[in-house]
Length: 205
Image (cartoon, rainbow, N blue to C red):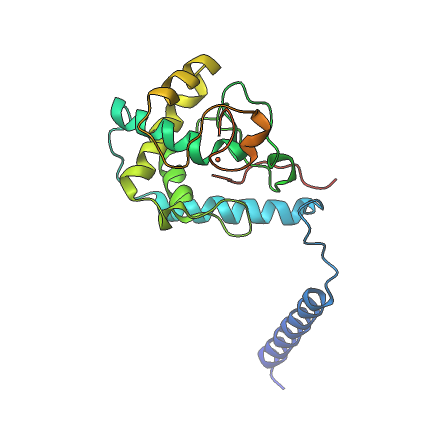
């Protein structure tokens, strides 16, 4: 038998064993899929890289509108208050009822300025196997861009400035001001009512 044939057979057999092994592992149910059981570091790193590269590849050609347009920012403030704070918080919020149970932990968008193209794509399309929904099913592109515009301003806002801009924002059917911060675990509820995205949740040690 020629050497290259032996090599080919060895490669095929090795791949076959790997496929069978992975299949057996998946079917066994040994991997804990619970949100309260963090991924191992290698799995977390692979999934994080997969997510980041996937979003970048699909968002890099997007054309940005004028994200400094005051009316766009104002509209986005209302949308954010109605849809996002339960997971992504707001100035003056330390936590919400739903946030501690989310894995990976969503970024605190009151403290992090996100890339606008990536933010638009993630808001519109959501992210598989996370709490981030695809808002594009219920919101048009201009509305999503308004949220992106607001996100560029949010990290620089004080709690008072945040409340003031939300109070002036065009009304949104889901937005309710007033109440307890703990109510903000559900979109449209609480004093600062919620894009569960996915960033640096600590992997298992």
